[in-house]
Image 1 (cartoon, rainbow, N blue to C red):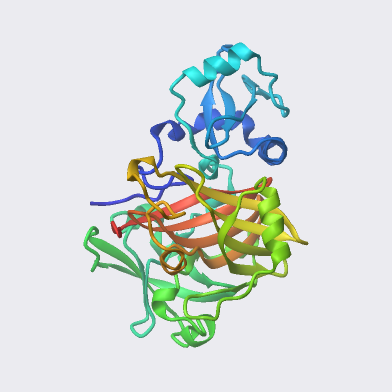
Image 2 (image 1 turned 120 degrees about the vertical axis):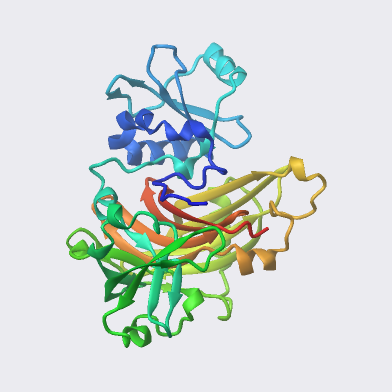
Length: 375
């Protein structure tokens, strides 16, 4: 059973089919920063859909809060976009609420088009790092050796460290759901000691690039927490700023994730107290004491019955920190803004993703998915 690399769409099992009509996004692409900043300031935005609200024949961009009580709409008439919210009549709102609108998380709003630098660079995550055997592989692209141009990938990036690799060919995959691995080896095995200093192989998911990628992106240095290290304390000022941004939501738990001096950012993983049947967690980026960008995850707990936890899978906060932490692997400045390569875990498996800042949101613009069915 094979999984393909999905640009801005995670696992097909997780994301509604309506999201895949990405042509609807095209008119809005030049305005995303403006729109996301604007709508984020005036309305709590958790999900989106494309829907012809004013019935003029063009799909509009609809933002909604998770409880669907707050709605903001941006109109597109052909290729002309109004970068300000559409005035909604009572009839429009009632009509919208009466439809079976297929909403998706805002994090999946963006899909790179052919002009996007990621569509040209096509980075590949290393799923399996073997330091002792000098073997770095990905099982997801195992049947597409020639299609991706595997031999062109000559650079490996972990944190701010860049090493040289050579493609060695296709090998049988040890993973249950995959047949083949594409395998690269370090030209200098000593890079393990310098490029991955302080990390075990299972803690690293570096990124492979084609030669010359640094003509397009600028690799940034950053600090990050990893499992086993002492937990850093988080100030009350940070907690208050995050709670204020989320209109008073109570924080059940918070952990430091990473910081980058060049981008003036510090990131935190936050679990909010359960509200009714809604579970809410977030990756929050802050600068100068204020929230600047967020990646929200919501879950409807009603199907799980009387789950006492703040978390969707009913685990404890410690379980969440142990198994659901977002792990930063690399970071770079790009023509489209700040991008972060991360590894994170869902109910079905492991995601290797690239987050990009747009306005006050972090959008998943790349997602490579390893099926594990961990829970």
